[in-house]
Image (cartoon, rainbow, N blue to C red; front, side, top):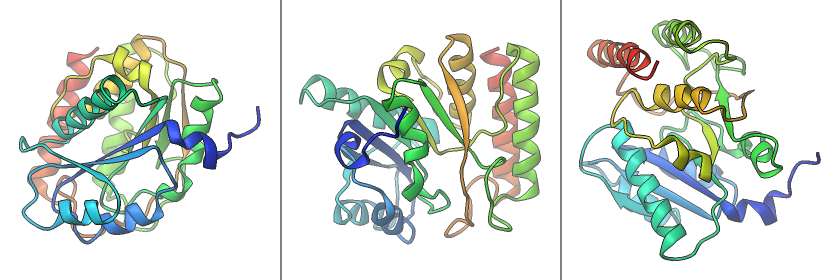
Length: 240
């Protein structure tokens, strides 16, 4: 199939960007984002001007005071539901992206097109398969991702996952089918394992990845790395 025309079809795509103290990077993310139906920035308890930067960049801002990547994503999904149900907005695809400017959001058509053309339900951006700027993923992230993907294959059978990347697109109806609940680091694992278990048509596409602006709240600290790693292993066991 031909790639869809982004100028006319991306109106049915809603973007969810969880953000915690990303005032330096968020404006660059929003500036690079192609025209979308809606961009929702979930302010996850920021103490800087993240929310103001989001509004200035044209995004819809949702406040979620409960800290946690999954909690922010769930708040974003709740807002998508409201847009769909109360405002009668046409939503086909939900795209998740980080606020730290590590993702190349100007190239998200490669994730969205396979869903809009009806070929896939879930498209995951793989940093492992793509071009990574030196230092963009520290060794603990690379090996941790590979280990987690290996564990998933052990518990839920054959799949082609190579990464737990944050840049991902999913059909809205498929996202609702997954009934996501994780409020923290297990979010990506939950989505990927449930996608396998519910037989969603799933592919990975290579994505470029740059060094983030600022210090990572997970891989940038020893405690964050340990907490994330523990939760990921627990989540794989939980959703096996």
